[in-house]
Length: 236
Image 1: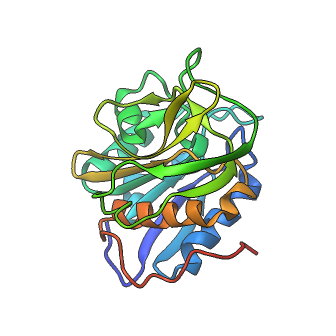
Image 2 (image 1 turned 90 degrees about the vertical axis):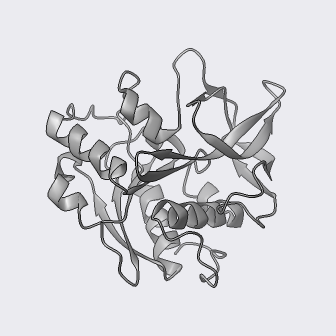
């Protein structure tokens, strides 16, 4: 990993059952306009070799295996490089369905903290709901106020038992408060998962942007940086 004036991020995308070609530019904009991150984008997972990942502080997943065109299976070398990057201290961030793959790969499930479980996880239509903080002393959420958003709310996500739930939202379908942001550790690495952000419009929410920036900073190993430029505004 590198530790420069700006934290270096690689976003993995290119396959997703959501509109990644619309959401990825917004994710890039949120990170770059903060002034804290330098962003690269990879659309072919096999480009994430151990040598390539050594150039980054953080890996952000906007990728899953359920795109319109079925992606190629990951090689053993790719899986090893991916896990070793996080285990050895690299940061990992998931946005929305970026964790919804590889149900039988235990290390991936632990790194991703929460994922889609077939026959268990679900969601209703896009709607407005409140997001509240449940872990006020964590660096990501300390001092962060609750907010309202219009988004897709997952319920009964497959949450890894070692994950810390940072924020949650009430589901009218399950009558329970469901996790929406989580943090955890994998080896020396820090992991942050944000289950919000179904589409580009939903990512315009200031609360979503604040959580993403705080989570990315923490996962990259910088803590949460005071004085970061506001995430408010609209992606161009």
